[in-house]
Image 1 (cartoon, helix red, strand yellow):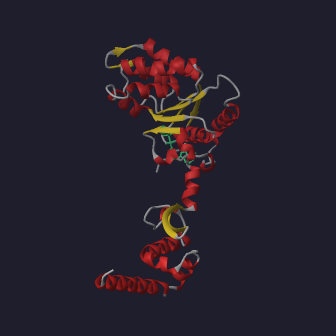
Image 2: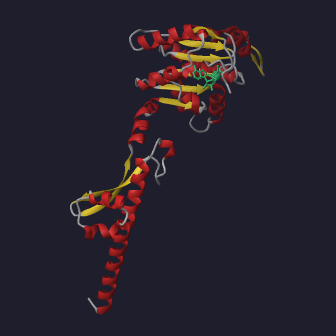
Image 3: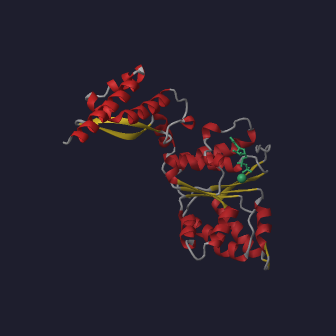
Length: 301
Ligand code: ADP
Ligand code: MG
């Protein structure tokens, strides 16, 4: 090594030592790094990263909830690990994030199409219980959960009634619960799904259509609010319901319309009136479901 290199090396190591000593004047930092079973000479090379780790560790210690995470990567803490005689750094998942991940594992079993966040999180434990109008629905739900997988020919619900009464929330709470029991489910806002399906003729139409036909538990949310065409009624809705009837796949509907009103709604398209075809669809829905009405105050804020 020539003299200049020697001089640079020496002054570098003096600098490293200085910044290390500086950082260690913080007693908590010193305590934190002292727990690492490694020589100080090595620690010195990583002072600024160790300070970063210490800041993240301190954030974690005072953290109240995952939403308030102050760390660079939310839910993770940059952490030093000693391996042999070297120091490695990795992002370790915190307890709060791990708990949320565990609670949200069921999301792998349920697909939502255009369903609002609060409904995606619907759960029995957050259900309002101030309304006797829901008693028959709760009874139906309890029986469904008890009998699913044990009895054949389980019927879904045709839940109709006033706007904002909680129809979608109740069925979503049931499907979320079933997803937690590892049953594959789909909650589909039907008017948007239909628009999306029609727009995907050239791409993944078949895949989407097949998925909705075959998913073990399906909610067609807000049926009756869609733009009815001969095609959507006879080539989309009809075959979906036919398949699900034949395969005994429980199917749920929510609607602002009674079955009678839905039948009228399905009869009229821009191509004219076809009462027979509408009646056929409604017959299938009747086969697939138990109709229950939910009239209640509007829960939407
Ligand atoms: P609907 O489908 O009958 O029009 P929603 O299910 O969308 O009504 O419910 C309206 C609002 O009330 C939503 O914001 C939903 O989160 C809330 N909500 C409805 N029912 C409940 C319930 N049982 N427990 C908690 N929140 C509910
Ligand atoms: Mg709804």
